[in-house]
Image (cartoon, rainbow, N blue to C red; front, side, top):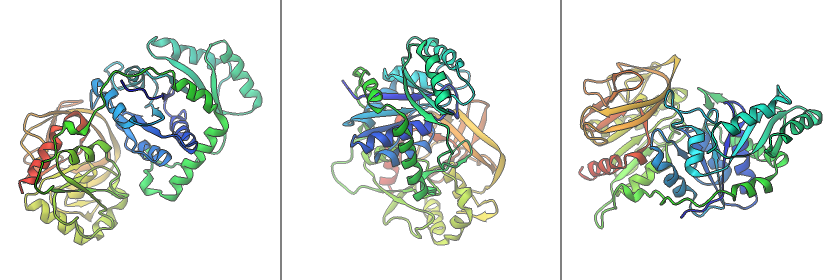
Length: 452
């Protein structure tokens, strides 16, 4: 049994203030000395970076589409082990999920899987008594979703607050916080998300501090903690990266270099844990700064991020580009997702990249965003042919051609197409995947690294 006090922070719609409230709550409770476990519903890589800054712990995703509903509670229990409180930030509106698939991957579904009370963050800037009808509708839509209270955001004045409170008195749901309308905390956005923490450094620290102060001043932290404690124990066994493989009893651990730094910020914490459990020594390097790969690199993982923002700097680091090219052309296992795909291309927005793939990338006006179903169409160090995985695309770039002579994936949703590249030991694709759903890919990747 796993017993961790927990709250799900949700909203009627996007841009209601979920991230400010959730991150602020994490920071406010952490400032009281509590060990706070941060979580995010959905595939978003960026918000968990702010959560991590607020709590000092890895931000973790709970995605019922990519990992399956059966893994949501075990992954939660893994991340929240030993913590005093867990705060789960929702995605979009409370009942919004994977397009055309009912409640799948919605905040509501995750709240039910975690048996967690929901705090509804309402943008009250353009309403007064109507807030009661809105809250009543959300609270009564699904009886299995337990909304335990409301935080009113963007409240204009004492008079406005009094009108809202009077209306909500009739709803039976307590007001757990009131946050006044004020200049936005400095959290600039890009491509439907915040600018990653790694790109803002000191500014991000100040933004998280400001969120914590705003929430501490406007919310009843004692009442929120009391609500969190009403969550019952979960019967689920915590997920463990040991599912991937047990590290070899003897022999060297192959070095797997993982790209990090400001240009490559998209990574799920479980990936490094799975690689380590499978027997690898995981070493992080920064393609913007490091001119060499880590000593003894046997395999390379280059995840997602915003390389288009750093194309000149990435291109200027010729020694590292040459090292990556030599490693890849020598047949070493390389797993590249999205930003990693662009980095391996011949060029990005006219700037020379590694040239491992005979393809050119450029920025586009079109945002490609959504869940995907895919099947590996050929053997690679990452996946055997026929391996089925669910993933997520999130990019505003175009790669031409989009697939190599040997593709990485056959995509089945929303349209059928071939995508990505497999050549020598390289598996490169736009598709973001969550390896906790298919831990055999980590084991397979490390086995190929060990065989070199």
